[in-house]
Length: 190
Image (cartoon, rainbow, N blue to C red; front, side):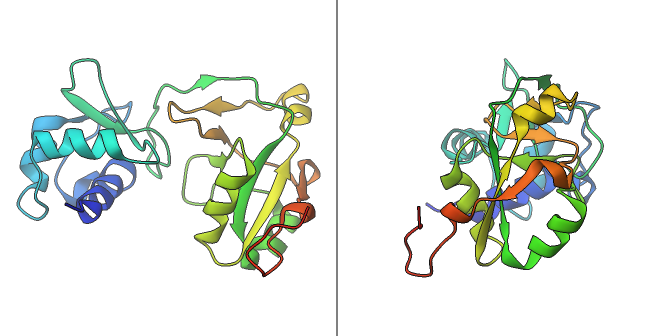
């Protein structure tokens, strides 16, 4: 059975609008599982077994349970102020950011900004960046000079699902990865 609608609703609640279902998140973004199920179930079918399945099968690993599975939270992507206990991590020399072609001029002028989220999301590989960019139209991939940024004192974090996070990326640390852009034939030019 496809639970996409329920999963998207959970994502919206746990990242952006817990009040829409009348739930509360603690300072670290955790929601009580029983409260969540009770408040979500009237509009979106949800019980503990389905919630466990959604968390286990989510291909982006958006959610985490605490040790005894009494609480759940989104791993990253919040627009509400929560501290998901991110640990600072040393990034690789290069990280990637996928976006839509329509945002390139703004990024080249202002750098990468979190907009409505708490952090800018970066990928460890080009394929993930391309998939993210494709959600916003024709994908464009930026190479982020993350090693250089770290040496300059910028702080990077890595979420439990492998997404790299940073408050912003200034223009001088960005390059369009022209050799990785889609050629229009469905193949990347190298």
